Amino acid sequence: MAAYFSEADKRVLCQAAVIAEDMTSDYYKLSHSRWLKSRYDILTREHLRAEEVSPHALAMVSRYDGRPPDRWLPSAAFDYYRICLQDPNILAALRRRPALSPLALLCYVLTHELVHIVRFSRFEARFDAGVAERAAEERLVHRLTRQILAPVRCLDLTPVIDFYESQSSGGRMYAHL
Image (tube, rainbow, N blue to C red; front, side):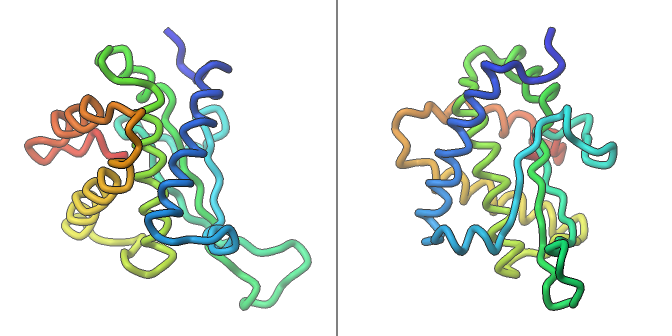
């Protein structure tokens, strides 16, 4: 059992990242320069800091203050986001649910996290929200993610949505993407 993504998994991840960013950009009408204002990276487990690791989530967003190395004024600061993929949890979900397509699951996970980043950067959601506000935000982001990916006919999202629904019932948010 692999604990981290293989090279083949990372190739699928690259495909999923292109689809997720493209679909999210289209939905929110974001230009390339707008994405530069919402700077982010996608990292797999091998590159995560200890505080970015979750035993339950498939992915999570971490936010940091960024600043160009040659700029010291506060006005040069920007929000820098890291989409922290939890390879072991994603791979375990794929093993437990053979109906899940790796491409569909990764597209869903990445799109979900990109929606969070867009909403944080537009001040439509608070990064430091309380428990009740976070739960409502998760429900909204899942709905938006489904809307964004609905036009992508080559993805079978039904098993992914079923997986999320089974994991989040009863208030458990272990499928938190």
